[in-house]
Amino acid sequence: MNLKELSQMLGLSQTTISRALNGYPEVNKETRERVLQAARETGYRPNRAAQRLATGKAGSIGLIMPISPDHSSDMHFAEFQSGLAEASIVHDFHFVIMPSRAEDEEQAIRWLVASGSVDGYYLAYVRDRDPRITMAKSLSLPFIVHGRSFGLELDYPFLDVDNEGAFYDATRFLLQLGHQRFALLNGPSDLDFAHRRRLGTEKALAEKGLLLDPRHTRHSFMGDEQGYRGMKEILASADRPTAVLCASTVLALGAVRAMNEVGLKLGTDISLIAHDDELPLLKPENFSIPLTTTRSSLRAAGKRIGERLIAMINQSEPAAPEQELWKVELVVRASTGPAPT
Image: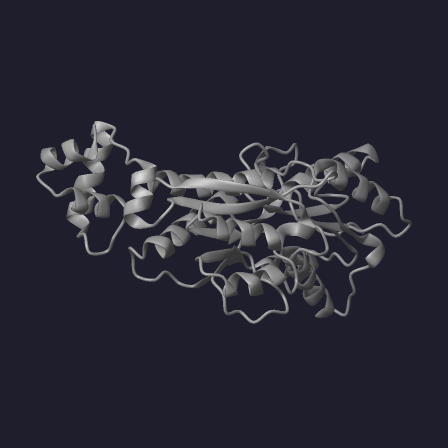
């Protein structure tokens, strides 16, 4: 079915149908839903080239994918993308993915914006004082940040998890169980979320007059092997910790493997709390000893960012909150217990 036939079937002008499909605010909600329902039932899809000429919009969201020889595939990134895809399918948006070396990301964003192939984009893997945010504010297209950048004024649209609060609460919980020697298996040190998780841990410890031992702190890519190696090194020390905080269930998977190798019983000899991004293939309740976690869904974050970015592009809804900070839930399971005597 083409646009003319859909117009005749619904008794609406082709312009009204086009505007309804593209989310223009002057089309009322009832008409928009009627058009969308008819398009679904008939299998109608607008011609992208014609749509772009008529609206000046590409119908696409842009993202930069960092690539390097030592960059492993990241299931956290994939889970976030799944949520973004959910929002994109509903609104009939495409992805335009531009691979880039980390040192070339700013230029890659400029090229993406200048190409005219996207209507908006999002920034991920945010770093302290991230120069991409300052640059994005100077460009013409809508953008949103997944995370925040420590050291920059919060004058840009973002969605972030309260990483500092999450690890502050997790550390306080372990302190209440009597633990005093802590380890932290964290994400890369230059990423903002890892910085804030370390701050939350240090803040809770400082309230009890304790310090986070740098010998028991690791920053790495959040993979199983990195968790295993980091935990193995930490457990080899004479004053090994009784409590461990992991920035991901993937890191925790490797950490638990290292603990099992030296015969430590999780929840009795040593306690562990991991951040749970609700990865479908690695559920904390399915570990041999279920993990206590701080929980926040990456897929839900991706979906919300997609919805907000598309609304910014279409200007089809009242302005969403420009800045969102999601609280994190502490879910207590069997991997935490009183400090061993």
